[in-house]
Length: 167
Length: 167
DNA sequence: ATAAAGTTTCAATTATTTTTGAAAGTTTAA
DNA sequence: TTAAACTTTCAAAAATAATTGAAACTTTAT
Image (cartoon, rainbow over all chains, first blue to last red; front, side, top):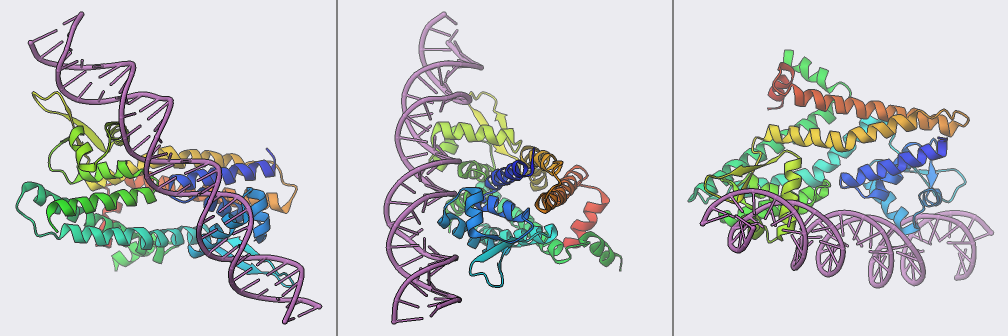
């Protein structure tokens, strides 16, 4: 397997993995491609390598920038824009975690709080519902807080936590 | 908001959240519905409450059982099958984590190992590719191992410490 | 001010995923 | 056995999501 085959395989695999996690295939593929590129890459090149349209490239590059994991770069004497991916994996994980928390977990928590606060207490079903959704709220909130803490202390989050614990 | 409205809202929200994480909407909805049901529920009832077809109910209940988070229950003197969801949230999280690791992360690791092992060293691009995919392999493997440990020893001192810390 | 080089937008198309429904299959009771 | 009660399967249809491509827009150089 030569370099280009390997790169293609990596890009395809990353794309498929993205799909399974609710990230569109092209977005994941572009990210994969930029991750393993040693230099900043133009939109033109992304389109060519991934065999996608200009519109698709533009929209997904924008989405990746909104997530904060791809950056625009400007080259002296060049009109075109170039793109690079966040290559520090800890930083990448943190940004993804924070973004998903903001976009998906926080709104879900809001609903959980809302539905667990109904006053209906008339039936056993209703009581069980309140109990279960309250537990779920607590669990999700706890997990979300943990993500916050871990991403805050990124490098040695565990060590810092333990040290803090001992004081 | 009365109980049925609240339940419906919860089911809808959970379904939408599932979609965003690569789990099909109906599967997430059925799971949500079973989670907040205080008694085991027949396929008939699932179909009715969620307004879905028999085939859809059957396939998604099977999928949930394959994930190990929904169980069949038999009632004395009843021909029909009844279903309940795993209600212990720690147990639920562990099962989901293990299943996703097995289905998605492990295969991805295999590919990462493969593509990072190419012998091509001729270009700077190829060298960078090997370096970056090797880092990625290490990172994903590390994360996956951590999930294994946390889920395996869920009640040991370290986890307890961290959990305590998070409160 | 104009044109060239480039980027963005979005309605229409295409691809993918989910859902249906009816036929086939299974299990149990009589 | 037979048939009633129930479940599973899967090809076709429907719903959803991603992608294209061309027009509109923006920026820069002359």
